[in-house]
Each structure stands twice: as structure tokens, then as C-alpha cells.
Length: 204
Image 1 (cartoon, rainbow, N blue to C red):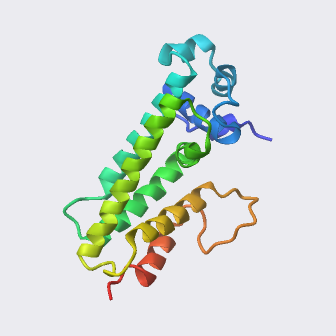
Image 2: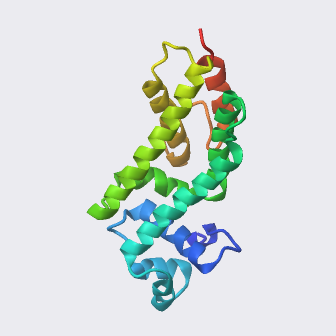
Image 3: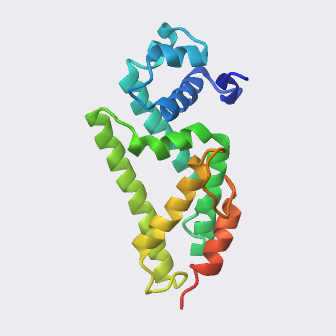
């Protein structure tokens, strides 16, 4: 069996490799179940190298959360242009999620699984606030679609949001061995967009 180290993207710097390894370990074992020693072994560096970048495990977690959001915001900013038609923005949003998940799968899984992890209270508060900001962004986007008649006035935006985010989360966190079946494969956001466009995103 190949080491999980081979999953870390080639060519990234040491700090990036630490982020990737920490995210993968947190996803598998939870935050409390991972030690600094394990992260160092996964990356192939000594503790002094990790402590050069991060004061302790909590500091690493905070930086990892910031990095996950920073990368996500960069992808969304590139593909969701404010001057475009709403349907193009929505399509761009799903495209950005697809590219992000393909290039940084462990960071995306960490971001999605983080609410299920046991985190230090101060960090959990930050994670909750960031999650609320994300939900607000998606809600505002869907409400804009309703105002511009891409979404029916009678559509429950909150319910639509749950459907969309739930579908994305299932696509990105489902393991290969899962018995759950659904009509989209991992990262197949074009099919998800087509389904939503044909069935839900037409005002009546």
C-alpha cells in the first residue's frame, strides 16, 4: 500500500505540505486524535520545522481554517463575477467548488467535516462564525436569484440552500466504500448544475 504522503500535492512548500497532512489526519482521526508528532511524520519533517511555522497544534488549526477559507474565497472570486447574469454566477459557484475540491481535496473535506469535530472552544467559536458567514453568502445569492426570477417566488430559499449544500457535501465526503447511491459522481458538478437548472431554477 502506498503511503498517504503520496496524496500531498507535489511542488507545494513546507507550510503547504503541513496544511495538507494536518487536514488529512484531522479528517481521519479528529482534531483531538492527532498529535504534532504524527503530523511531522506524515510530512517528513522534524518538530523544530513545524514549530518554525506554528506555535502549537491550536495555532496550526487556526491557520488551517484561515487557509481553507482563503483558498475557497480565491476560487469563488475568480469564477463568481458580480456583473454576470445570476445563472452564470450560480454556475461559476459550482465550478469553483469543483476546481477547489479537485486541487485541494483534503482541505475541502476538512472544511466540511470540521463542524463534526471536537475543537477548542475559542477555535470552535471562530469556525461557527465563519460558517454563518458562508451560509449568509449562499442565502444572499439565492435570494438574488429569486429577485431576478431565476427562482420561483414561492420557493423556500432556506430549504433550497439545504438541498444544494447537502448535495455538495455528500459528493465531497462520500467514501468509495459507501453504500449511499445518488445520481452524481464525486466532483461531477456539471450534472448537479444541470439537474438544478432543469428542475428548480426556473421561476413559475
